[in-house]
Amino acid sequence: MKRFKKLTAGLMGVVMALGVCGFTALAEGNYVAKIGDTNYEDFADALSKAEDGDEIVLLDNVKTDDLGAITEEINGENRLVLKKSLTFDLNDHDLKITGSRIMVAEGKKLSFVDNSVSGSRRGGTLLLTGVSGSKTAINPQKNSSLSVENINVECSGSAFYPQGNAASVEIKNSDVEAEVYCVGTNAGSTDNYGVKITIEGSKLTASADGGDNCAVLINVKGRLDIKDSEITGDRQAIIARAGDVTIENTKVTVTGKYAEKGEGNATEYHDSDWESGNGVPSGAVIVGNQKGAYNYEADVKLENCEIVSKNKNVPAIYTDANDVYKSNLEISGKDSVVTGEVIKKAKQENAHIKIYGGNFDDDVREFIDKGSYVMEDEDGNLIIMDENEYEDYLDDQRDSGRHSYSLKEGKTERDDEEEEPVVTPEPEEELRCRKGQSQL
Image (spheres, helix red, strand yellow):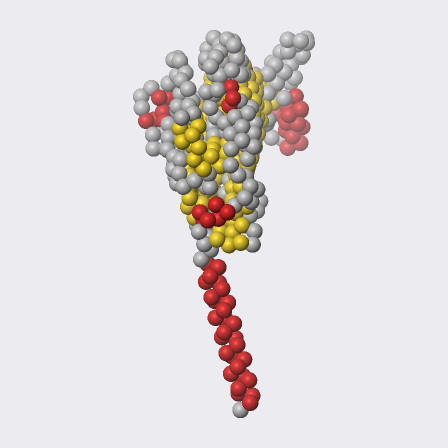
């Protein structure tokens, strides 16, 4: 009997423990966010209690109108201004912002991360539903920053707009989808110059019903660095009207959807004055500026990139310049592939294109660096190599016996040295070669 009572008591203890655990789990399920060791049932309460530099971890899907920003009158308009540096760990949940543009105050840092995943994986989703068209959702000001890492971003208008000297946007290991701009700048004032945009290991897609969009726009003095990413747009994928731009190991695609929407869209602005924002020719990459309104040169370097136009009437690359500010485009790397036309606006002496390497289905001989080796494959595509790449190619051909290229053009002549003799590989190689939208 005594043993039975002990057994009963033990079972009751287990049941009570399970009941307490179940209640605790249920109670924790009512919390939507935490800051440090403090849990919150109401997200607005967490935002109001957050201090400068805090990290807010989501415990459930939440939404907010203002992200804790306060309303201030700026230039006669009421604006939402976030005056605290905050980090939001989405923790594999959705964070929906339903209000209009949120400005990140001078010197502050706003970060959206997901620490529940690592490496190149994506976790939760940032939903920016309070904007449309070219109106942007998050707007870092002078010397402030926005960081996005390991998350998904979906925006009903334009997502990110760094504005002001030293304002920055960093997108790393994230997918960003926006209807008009994923990230863009504004050249309305020289106060907006000096921005820095960094995109790495990410996929940015601009997509709207009418196709009038551009994934990435820089039109101010500043830096744009893109690496190991995919950038896709319907009207343009990347516009560099001004600024220093480096793009490496990245696929850049224009779908041509905008061109297909209306007659004349494919060649719009080829022979007419460019407008502001993305009121420029369609193409995967647009370099330079037709007028002098953007007070800085466009200097763009593409290395080992794939540039694709999916519409044969839309160029892969289009460049222009003006009499005051030049544009410079360099394409290099044996893994560079350009599918579509490469256009330099006729009679524009300040627009420069220099090709050091890559594969092209367009005749780009006029842009090839003097001293590069030019070959043509069986489909008529041009293969451009520098001297080291060409020597490696010959070694590979001799070792393997392969001969996948036939030469139509050779080494271009250098201006600063005597013409070198024609290099004729062994006959079995079958090669003859000599060097050769509206503003934001």
